[in-house]
Amino acid sequence: MNTISINYTLKYQFKTHPNIKVDSKGNIFNSKTGRKKKMCYNGGSIGVWLDAKTFVIKSKLNSQIELIPKIDCPF
Image 1 (cartoon, rainbow, N blue to C red):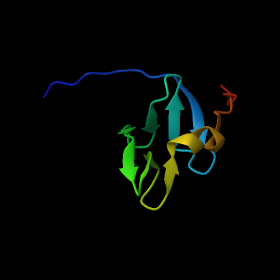
Image 2 (cartoon, helix red, strand yellow; image 1 turned 90 degrees about the vertical axis):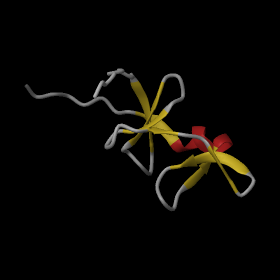
Image 3 (tube, one colour; image 1 turned 45 degrees about the horizontal axis):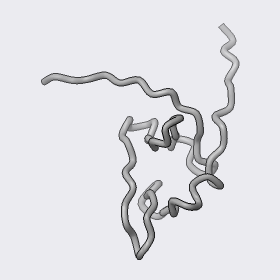
Image 4 (tube, rainbow, N blue to C red; image 1 turned 180 degrees about the vertical axis):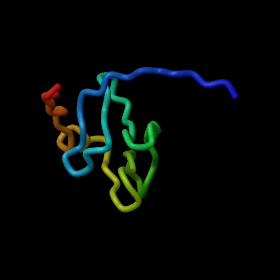
């Protein structure tokens, strides 16, 4: 099996779902599984499913994200 490694610089995270991250280009990733989230159509709106019950509309995404906090490494 052949694999391709790609590195992304993550910049934002969702306030309610800290494992869902956004890079500088606007791609949305699940940091636990490493999968990229896709935009989908639900009930007449375009958005992203964050988990099985949470759907965020594309126009409301900016209000749901925050900068990833810097973590000091003690060693």
